[in-house]
Image (cartoon, rainbow, N blue to C red):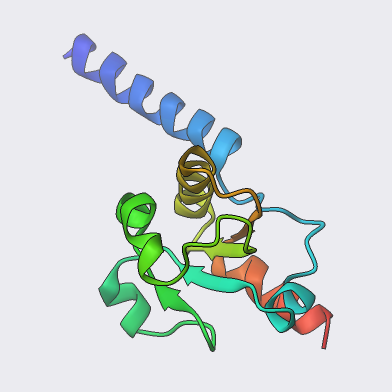
Length: 124
């Protein structure tokens, strides 16, 4: 029983650390509306089901776990600005890293839905 409790605690700690390292922050200084207006590709990296329940206008859906191999269906220009977002900011952080590793040079982490909503409202 103690081993299970220790394992559970370890999982919680790893989750908290991953969230601190990868989640919810996004690229706070990015001017999301201006980037979209200038032709950035807006990518919702949630699942297809989540995407179908609602997404930002103009967004395409490429789940974060396949973005590196599926992005070329929408752009092959590795210098094009690509904005990624998800529900909380965790998957968008992973998607950004995947795209950078694939050679994309202008990837913006829009963070979670709330952060994107705020960014789009603040600049109207």
